[in-house]
Image: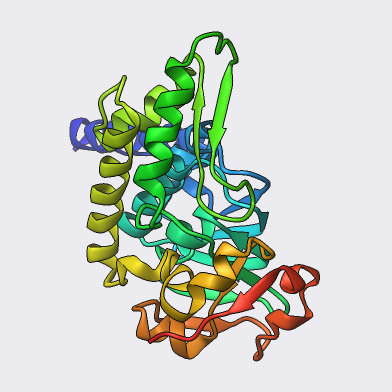
Length: 273
């Protein structure tokens, strides 16, 4: 009997020790418990590195990726974030502005998408932008031109449409993004645009979103408005977003008035189809 009690006591001690060790690890590993990520600024490869662990490992019952204010940024990084947001079932909330690559790939990826009362979604092109391959060729010409010795080259109308930027050198963070997306290093501009399209198509297929969502406001009747370059981009109302496949949108304050956002004066409204 005493031997049995000793064994039982030992087992209980081991169990208690295991729980204590587990609790200490739980306290130390914030990525297991994180339930909110806030993006405030441009999307850069370092953004992906900073939040990847939280996106992947968190087991919080409700997880929200909050976009406070983002004018967009690196498209590859935004796609990588969108993939993780979708794969690990995070909600997305837009507080102020979600523009460009943020609107293209982060907002649609949310399980539930929350729009604050005066928030604004701004689209202005992407992989299916009509002049994207043309810009790729222009970039190649700039890079091969005699006397080009700059660390960064951008083609396209900045803050008016999707652009392509070449930066001399490669950061460790960018290498992680490319590895995650299974993109090889050293692609030329045409290969980059093709890879952007195929990766974007795959994500949109999983989300059930029309790939034209980022460029519909640049074609047909909207083409002259776009090519006037008077606006930073375009926006959709809820009914058009739904027809484009972006559903499960909830209004955080019970209403959505993007026209009250100060940046609204820089967009034109587009109706799909």
